[in-house]
Length: 296
Image (cartoon, rainbow, N blue to C red; front, side, top):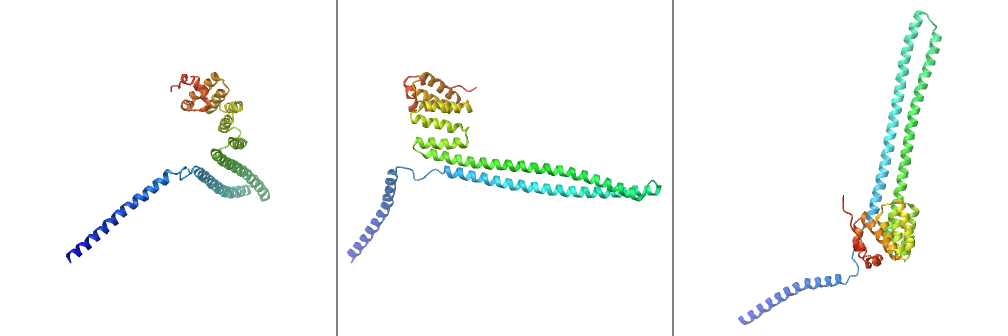
């Protein structure tokens, strides 16, 4: 009997110990499967939300602009109504006081006997018409000035709205260009950006970069010259000129352009060592002779 009880207890302990071992081994197996899956990934599991962020920012700006426009129109309407109320009140009070004055003066003149009631009435009406006409003209000028200001504000708001829409479209094109692999497609997108904004220096310099990738250094030089006419201190344009000159074998000129880019931003010196476009310049040893401009 004791032997059977001992055997049963041993079986129960063995089953519990096996269950614990299996429960401890299961998470390790799942963790190993997750690590194997992650190591076999060839691209990240997520994408940056840059485009969504820009679109939300543009939407917020458009909403704020519309709210500002509505608030401005409301304030102008309130000012216009208040001005009209003040004008009417002032005109009414002026005419009333004027009639009191005329009535007093007329009574005095009648008592003195200088003129008749009819003459006083005619003169009073004439003077009243003149004063009322002056008041009307004065407030018409003020209302016209307010209207002109409102039209100017409305025109400015319309221009800002158009510029905001243009900026939104250009941002979308830049995002498309960053996702393109074909240099020809990138150049096509840069051309669309330049149609909307002809003085976009970044579009010109990045188009020059694509031209270099297509082995068109002369085209890249022409684009960089256009960019420098707009912004003479654009470091990216000088850097692309250095790459184009290096591709053409004009190493001295390439070194001068690269030094000019480094003077504007010392970051270009770090890029120059690994840039394949500047390999001829690096192999000639001229990059090592370039210096970083010390801050004043």
